[in-house]
Image 1 (cartoon, rainbow, N blue to C red):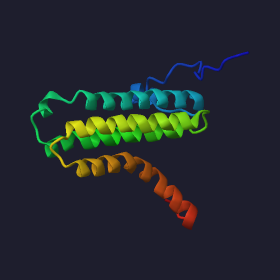
Image 2 (cartoon, rainbow, N blue to C red):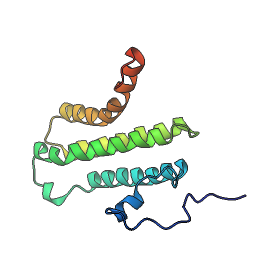
Image 3 (cartoon, rainbow, N blue to C red):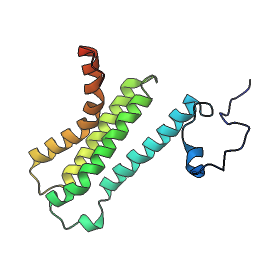
Length: 157
């Protein structure tokens, strides 16, 4: 059984103006969908891990700041964290054990929310919950709403 490596036998074209970058771009002839999915999964797992860890060990520069000042760090970090879960969900949609995967997303998001409320103790709890809910749902909505509109009215969103 022969395993396809997805590499061409020829050398990359180094005469191109943007040679080092063009070699790493996606190429349908060279890159198999499995390799692309695996590379995306690694990148997304690293992004979600980095965001989770950043929330666990809050930056020292934000230690004495108010909750509203901390939001400048929390909002992009939380959006990136939830967007990475959206991509993981998309990449693993045909995998077995979907219920277990979704449960792990739910509990990891819950743990993230507990950490977030601990870091933003000077904000009202209701506001923290609303902020967290919006930040966790926004990437899912941005991905789902155009798809639903396309099904309902035939728009090309």
